Length: 274
Image 1 (cartoon, rainbow, N blue to C red):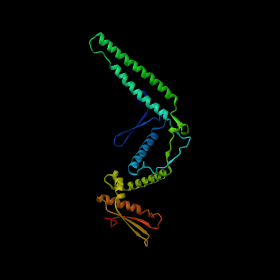
Image 2 (cartoon, rainbow, N blue to C red):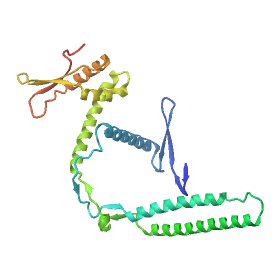
Image 3 (cartoon, helix red, strand yellow):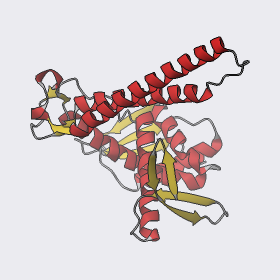
Image 4 (spheres, rainbow, N blue to C red):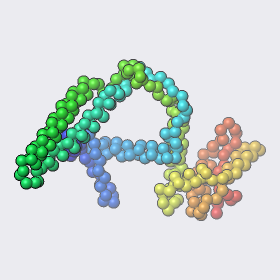
């Protein structure tokens, strides 16, 4: 399969997966050698990653700044050359302008009667448009030659002093992002427990988010060595049954609350089962 736009040509490989429902999923790749099974698995895995980032941005504040500290960028780090970026913008702008002038030039027609005065005016207008197009073409050619001679990337140490910059500190964010990914995996495990118990399995994460924000009573019992977390009832009976099942699953792990010897017991309402 070949795509063409703005003078560029890109040939890609299309693989189709036939689902059990009869629906076909098109997979597009520029890898022309790998087997279709490997490509399909890789692309579907990529979709899973994109779903994670979409959900994490919405509900785990993945893009939120951890702090406002900055740090030096290593001198050998490769960055986009600002001069090349400027030339790219100028080339795109001039190409667009030239395309409009060419379209206007092609649309110039003499639709009136053959009159020497009108013909002379039309020819002068046509000549002026032609001269402008030639000037734009020469200017575009010069810009493209300059762009060709300008590297697209530079080492940070080779940037002009006024274009150098620092980056946001990554240490705190990497730690927080790791914790968020662990939280996401834990939520995924809980969602897998809830999904079979709900009429719509895709609502499992919504129910979990409701649990996170619901009120709860904390009942420590030092003598029994337990910490009971008593959740308040959900809005629907179906949700209550699913949450009780989740509580049973989590209680079976016999997790001890951090920095204590109290075993966690999760409970919905005052009774264990309906």
